[in-house]
Length: 375
Ligand SMILES: Nc1nc2c(c(=O)[nH]1)N[C@H]1C(S)=C(S)[C@@H](COP(=O)(O)O)O[C@H]1N2
Ligand SMILES: [Mo]
Image (cartoon, rainbow, N blue to C red; front, side, top):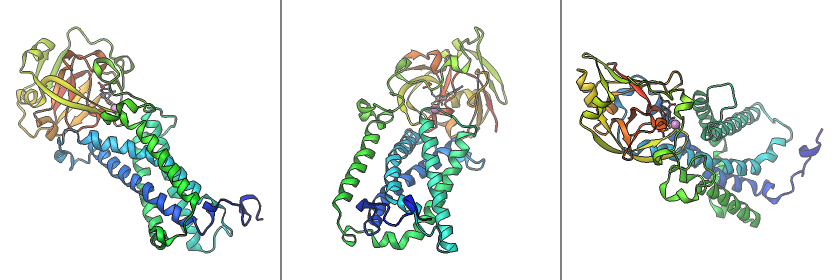
């Protein structure tokens, strides 16, 4: 029965020696655990901001202005760094996959099952997340819900794993406790270098002073029309032609319509606000337009009203978005007509787009045609 990797002594690396393995696993586990914790908390933040439960929606904060930019930037940075860390951690412990006998007791079998769930959830989570940063969805299931629930599964699995391993973790927490091993040093240095390199060549998609090192990230934040990347072009969204008689319609107690010239005639305000895409890139820009709060007041709606924004786009998941009151009322929230001093390019949402502080990029609706007061 005990052939190949199941043989006793099949793994010859000193790093795989049961005497040395736990300390390596603990050191890597600390880094990986920290990365996964940051990833989970920032992911939860993103999910709540994007799809808040009804009771929470009226309390979402429109500040800090760069809040989502920072949390989602960290989400993608920690997720990418977790990839080499997961590889190193799995390599360290994978000989245990071939343990003999496969299960010593029911408890041992359950413990192994929990590890299987944890590893599968983390691998699938990192894989779907990575492909999402590339806007590549080669699977039949919806990305966001799957990514969300896998996050809970991975975090639950991690807590069980930590509880089971607590004594081993405690015994190997300090360097003195474990015998020194030159190969471990080399392995940990190489893993740190790999995680550091992955971070350095991708973080520039959101961290301005790392921009020049942004070699592997799918987007350069400064490349695109008007100095801003485009996630979905007007052609992709099927809204290339804006009707010549385009009007903004605002529905509320006193509905009205405005032509583009009339909108331009209202008091214009400026706001320095980022587009912070869930896929990990972000970029600040100077927007000019009419305050959303003013448009809503003109329709006779009181402060504290939420709105639904509809795009000219024929179809697509971001055609309609709802905006809770704190965003509508924020003085920085605009229906923007210009970006960085120029009339919006078609790809940035001409004739008008929403730009609001501390909100995911997906909700910054482009090619707006209608704003409805909903409460
Ligand atoms: N109507 C509409 N608005 C949209 C989108 C879309 O597909 N349709 N994409 C969103 C996404 S995912 C992002 S990140 C931002 C990007 O804005 P930009 O292309 O002007 O940089 O627009 C958002 N607004
Ligand atoms: Mo996005």
